[in-house]
Image (cartoon, rainbow, N blue to C red):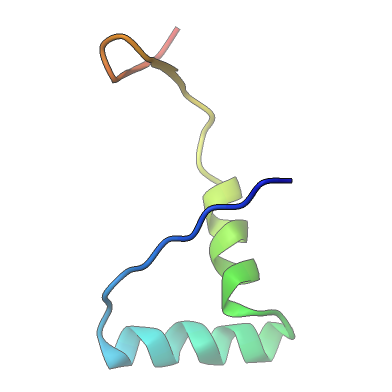
Length: 55
């Protein structure tokens, strides 16, 4: 699987919140974020318009 990196800026409070949650679940922060992303609905994107399709 080819992977991509995402760099975000978040407050220290939010970082600590997700890090603590990951520790409690015995997962990495990456795994927690991937779990949340996987919960998002699947959408198709029309590449020519760069607009999500709902069909």
